[in-house]
Image 1: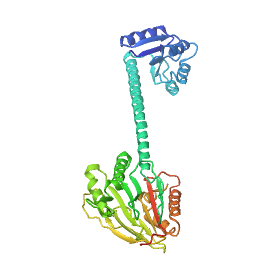
Image 2 (image 1 turned 90 degrees about the vertical axis):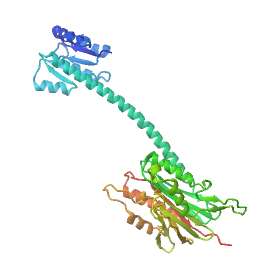
Image 3 (image 1 turned 60 degrees about the vertical axis):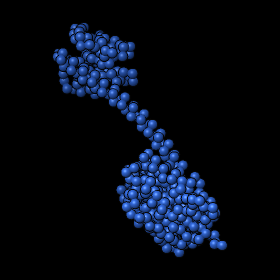
Image 4 (image 1 turned 180 degrees about the horizontal axis):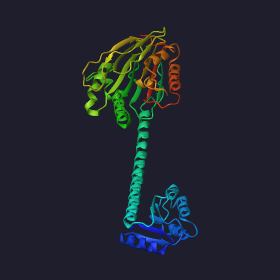
Length: 402
């Protein structure tokens, strides 16, 4: 389609001269002999560009420009002033009220053409930018919807309710950051006497990390064979065996190599034996859980090996502990202490440990509540840089071995 140019000038000679060479250049031209006529044609004809004289009978060019720019239907039409006024103040005034350019009479045909072509280039680039921005906005909207769906899936992998297990009180907290991350934890009922606990942190953020999280959490479900395996040909009862933590980590290390997902993960996996009052665990470079004894003693559960995904570069060790009534275990991800306040100061492990030590005598649910309160007080409303995950276990009166 031809681009439409409206010439508003009270001089018939100027209008005829401009119309002649602009039509020859391929533009569709309309003419207005004064400001009122020009505003009527702007509304009726909707030009793509306006050449506007300043000194005219009735309303002058400045008033016309203000009216054009004050109307939402016409304010985006570029206006080029075409006037005998050559003072800098006149040019500044014209540009200040919304003019796109200013040409002084007598004008040169080549200059007029160049200024018009320049405005149409700007207009076309602006239009393309608007389209591109609209496309990006739509893509961002779809991405946000996908991220919200992924976040919903991630939340669905967390314990949906606190398991009621005789001999244990269990509590958990999850504070997601703005980005979808790779934190996940859960409680597995392996059999009547054995309860499995794990906490995982996948490297990175976004949908790729969330997908790996989903995959690993599914793999650790008892029916998948990583945590419980059938004994082939067994007729005894039970006909299964509980897989030791170091073997679980070894299997994950083989299933999730770095070169397959370009993600690594840290994990702590521990098994509590309710009947014997003991636990066995293995830690793959995850922040070590805290074993809090009722007497105030404080121990890090750090036996294990390196991150998952390095193809067995180091063997995974196991640690064993005896637990008594009143003891507690706290599992967490590094998001618990690797966040900063408004001054850019990191919360840090020492401050985290000090908070926990001051709470040892409290019930496990109260400990988690106060840790979260300490984090919120420290960041003072600032966004978290990473997910904060906490899983707490408190040992109550345990079963007696019969």
